[in-house]
Image 1 (cartoon, helix red, strand yellow):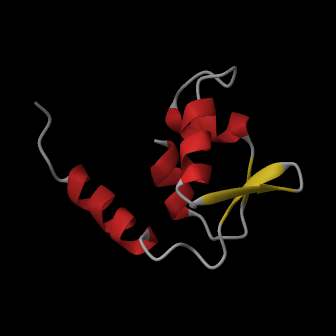
Image 2: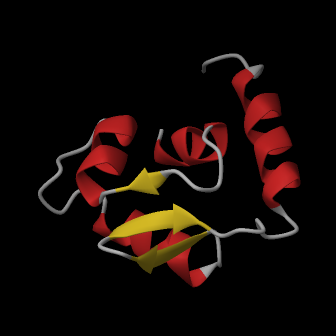
Length: 78
């Protein structure tokens, strides 16, 4: 999942749309565009220097979001 990959890397890590698509398991040809736009819109990523970077300092909700993802991993599959 793209969000999990983003949250597992340090803030200075450079991401391309293709790399995020691979992390999410979707097509690098448009399969991640809406996700990236959403990450930028909520202030998690910023676009600069030809790539995407986690905001530094990270947004205040970053740790809560990471904790939520960890909790979701423990839920049983339906």
